[in-house]
Image (cartoon, rainbow, N blue to C red; front, side, top):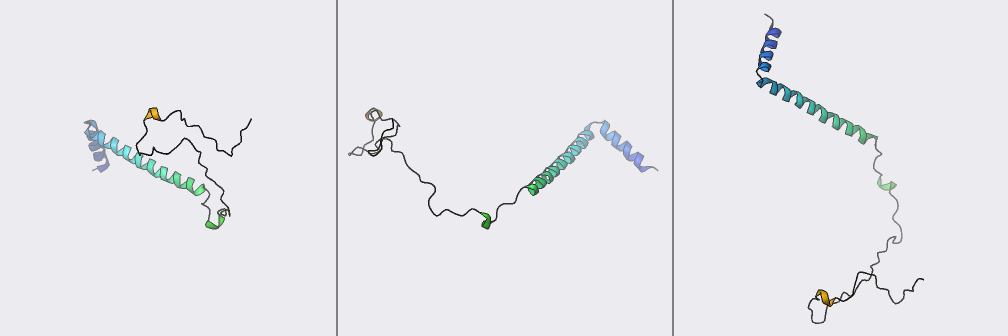
Length: 110
């Protein structure tokens, strides 16, 4: 008795009624998905191995002796509150925009 022929007939009858075809298609899709995931991880590992390694602590640039960044704040309008502590209404603000106010020591460029 040939078992492989009997298995093929059973598979053919299962696929012919349509219910088994869904399971076979989903199995093929699942195997393809797992293969794509494994390939993605393998490709990512190869790319990461080609990158330069991170610098070691002794390869870092030395810290400068002086400050290299000085943060200066621009002076905009008057930030003081009225003496009685209430808030100002929009019409009480006057013509203050957000232009920078010149200090007394700044000379004008012409």
